[in-house]
Length: 158
Image (cartoon, rainbow, N blue to C red; front, side, top):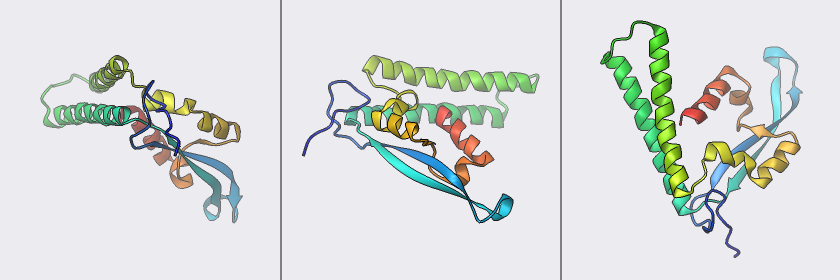
C-alpha cells in the first residue's frame, strides 16, 4: 500500500481520517417542471488525504469556533449586554464570529496546517470535477433550496 501525503500539512503522511468533500452536478429536471418535477444530479465524494495533525487541529478549530458561536448566542439570549439597535447587535455578532475565526486561522498559520474552507477546493481531483461541471454540495434538495444557503453560510461559521 502506498502512503499518501497529507494535503493540509507539508511533510506529513496522511495517517488521519480523510476530509470528505461532497460535490454535485445538476443534469436537468425529470418528470415535469415546477413542483411536479424532480432535480436530476450526479454526486461525487472526494476523500482528501489528511494527517492526524491536520485532523486534530481541524477538530480543535471547529471546537473553538463553536465555543465562540455558543458564547455569542448565550450573551444575546441572556441580555448580558444591552444594545441600542439591531445594527449594533449585528455588528457585535459579526465581530465575535470573526474574532473566533481569526484565532483559529492564527493557530493554523503557526502550526503549518491549511484550512479546509480555503484550501480543499484546490485539491487536484476537485479541480478536475469542477472542470466537468461539479460544484460543492451533496444533496440536490438541500443545495438548490434556501436551506442550501444556510448550509453554505454555516461552512464559513463552523
